[in-house]
Length: 154
Length: 156
Image (tube, rainbow over all chains, first blue to last red; front, side):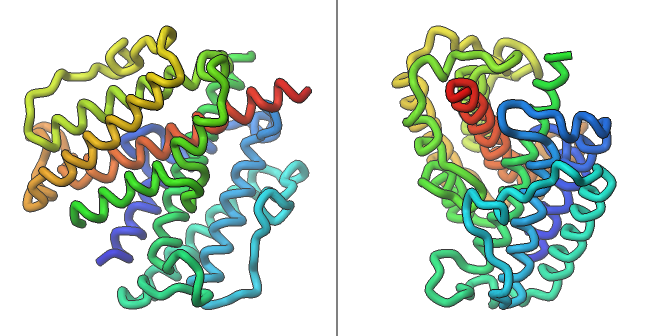
């Protein structure tokens, strides 16, 4: 039941328009190629999307009991350089990570949601899956504000 | 979903280092008084806090089945004027409305999760419970974006 809840919530924020604002794909679909890479401070939409993809891939690996993918905070693995990637490539990577994350959730037995992997880590697989969904929401808020602030500058 | 599940989400939101980013106090305490009111484009951190507090108060009344004022989108009730609020007042309001939400989540009758909030609209109470916490996370991300842009401007 909790895995269904997580999958439904994750997909709603990705494809639909949740209560709090525009969903991720809706917001990204309105951008020109230039807007993807235009900085506000040190942030770009492309950079934020690259960060989301990295953490989704991290969660997929951990839910799969794999330790071959790790992220060091504030490093290039946390914030990959997306400055040369076209929006089409980033959108494809985002879609791929969405498909893989939902497929992994579908296979996850409820009992495994309470398992901590690697053992001894503070968070369980359920916490991680919920955390990734909320991470998407947190940065979707930033992406939507970034787009709106860049539009102010026009 | 249970009261404990939703209450834990508010605890996580206010705790340092949630998995999704930075917690409420962790994000706001290091900021100066000026940071709260420094505009980045059309937005300030104080405005975002006012918006969060307004919706928390209104939502807490809804979950406790109390009469509540209607908030029109993009009205002054939706985005209250927080330009005269101090950092201390804003942090206190966030702490106070966290407690209001915890109380309301405890008082809510979870047998109503699938009931519609209003006969003319599709959404049900479970949408409101999920939406309330997700609304906070969404705007907390925005607060941290503004804080990061202000910091970047200072170091340029």
